[in-house]
Length: 222
Image 1 (tube, rainbow, N blue to C red):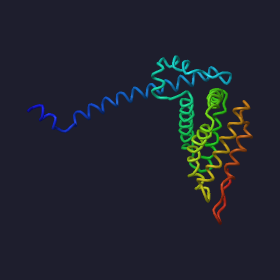
Image 2 (image 1 turned 90 degrees about the vertical axis):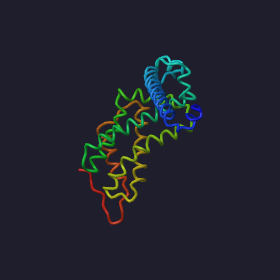
Image 3 (image 1 turned 60 degrees about the vertical axis):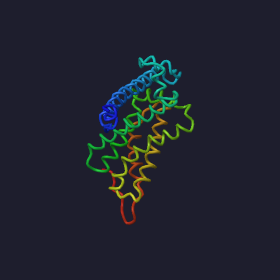
Image 4 (image 1 turned 135 degrees about the vertical axis):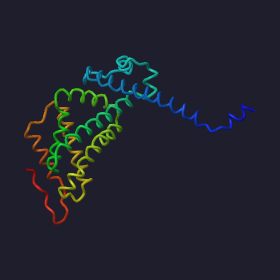
């Protein structure tokens, strides 16, 4: 009788315990993924563009097992795609923080350009190049990852472009982001850093790329 009474009770306790178990497992899995991403970045940095590390190299550096790797990634390409996405999120967060320091739309655009071009600094460029070198096998997926990198960066430009009188802030921001990210790729593969004149030229390009609304004029950068 007691057994029947218990089985008829709501499953609130069981569900809560199950949710706690899942939460703990989820936190552990997130830690595993972070270790794999960080280890992959370091191993790729060490290998540079001369060679591509194996899954075994990454797993060893992370101090994890092959089972842990394949629990989260079906292949090394999937890991590289995750690295590209992770890098894009970090860069977007950094650029947004820099833009928040400015009060004018022109100033925000300047910070946007400066923030993105920071990826060409020597201490960052070598690691970025190594990841891009490993992404070479992604094929069509790489084009998608380039879009995923430029899309959040473009979103940061929509508000300042709108303030400056853009007729289509989303389109103008998308075009500028694609052009700027593409130019950064040129700098990286040529292993050169933009000069101050180059940076100013890109800023001017971004400001002048705005398609003005009818009967409006784009303000000049001070």
